[in-house]
Structures are given as structure tokens and as C-alpha cells.
Image (cartoon, rainbow, N blue to C red):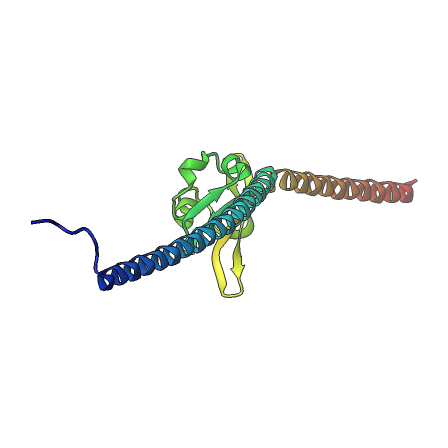
Length: 196
């Protein structure tokens, strides 16, 4: 018995057809892979560009936030930033100094409870807090056209102004007393002339 390694022409044609189909499939697969690789590289480049733009925007936002924080902390007016529920979310250095409390003790508190503890009210009339005279005002914090996103409590130290007003009133009283004394002396002098 001998084995034959020769293929029949039909089998050979079928095998050649199978190799040809395989080559075409491999070629199509290679093209698809190449196209997919190109698309991934393109998307990777777009993502990298987008990430860089976001990184730049984040740095700009951080710089703006730091700048605005610097401005807020350099104000001599005390500022309490409240959320829409009335809780203190941010405090500047002046508010901490004027209320004689550290910022971390102020943040998270309900603003009106805090003011009540300090015996202060939202009123632009002068109020005493220890040796200081303060005015406390509230302003709406507009974040968008949709409406308020919270409030600001503004605390002004008017101690010097009140002291100056008291001095001025005292001087006015002294001037008025001086004028009264001067008028009495003048009246006495005039009446004593009548006796001479």
C-alpha cells in the first residue's frame, strides 16, 4: 500500500481558493487594523490637545481664584460668604479679625445663629462688639441670571468714625456753651453800663 501525496485537481483548486480567501481576509484585517491604529493615534492626539487646553484652563482658573482670594483677604471690610441655606462657606481675614474668631470656627456655622451669639443683627446701624463699633449688612450674591446662589454679610468697622462724631458733637456742645457764657457776659456788661 502506498500513500499518495498528490492532490486531486479539485482539492488543489479548493485549497488555492481557501488560501486566496485567507490572504484577502488577512489583507482586509491588516487594512482595518492600520485604519484603527491611525484613528486611535488621531484620537490620542485630539485627547492630548484637549487635555492640554483643560490643563491651561485649570491653571488660569486657579490663578484667577488665587487673585480673587487675595483681593478678598486684602479688604478691610469683613466678608462672610453664605451658601443658599445661610451657612458660612468663606471668611476673609477682616471678618475673622473684626469678629475675633478664627476662620475655621466661623465656616460651617449658620450665619444668623453666629450673629445672634455675638449679639449682632443685620442692620446698617452701628452696633457694639466689645470695644468695636460695627455695621452689618447683607447683600445677595448673584451667580447667574437664574437668581441668587447665596449671600454676603459685610461687616464694617465704624469705630473711628463714631469716635470722630462723638468728638465733633462734644466740640459743638462746648462751642454752644462758650457762646452761652459769652452771651451772658455780654448781657452783664451791657446791663452794667446802664448803671454807670
